[in-house]
Length: 100
Picture (cartoon, rainbow, N blue to C red):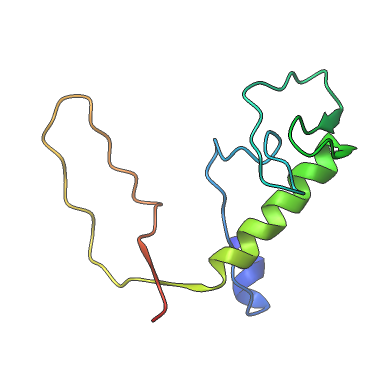
């Protein structure tokens, strides 16, 4: 996808693996504490919105992509290594700042 986005001049936005796209109501933004994989219809406890679980996730990811399009990456060099035991450097993360 990265290759294709560069080819077509698009911006690729990658959501964090644990981004709660399925657990968040695409109508009001309320987040469910638990959502079983067997629950195929998302039902919001706050606004009572009902939608297919996958369509709900797609709408939330669309909103994330639109929000990320409004920020600008900050230029930086390689990440500073951490010395603490058990720490991990993720070179795929991008630091962003809001446009002013």
